[in-house]
Amino acid sequence: MNKAGLTAGEEAEVADIISQLADEKGTYFEERTGVSFEKGLKQIEVWEQSQDPQQQQLAEVLRLRYIDGLSYDD
Picture 1: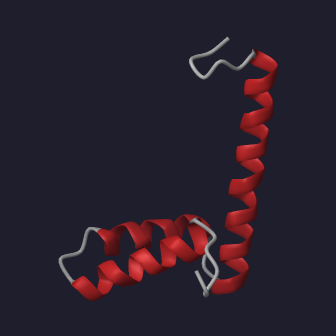
Picture 2: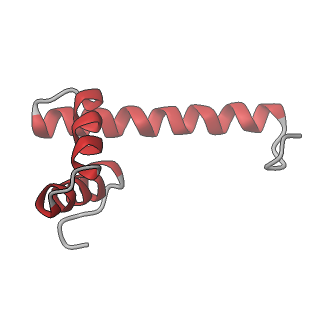
């Protein structure tokens, strides 16, 4: 068992699920924006580290929408 109390089989299953979720997020982001997910994540990170409050806010909105999966209503 690992630190989370999972057996090797459970750990592999969880890793597969997380990988699938990440792929789905990436595909959704790319379909909606036309930008590769990797480039999008890098740009969001740049905006998060910016001193410009508008860029920081944009980064937060994009992260919540496309990474965390919140709907517009949320």
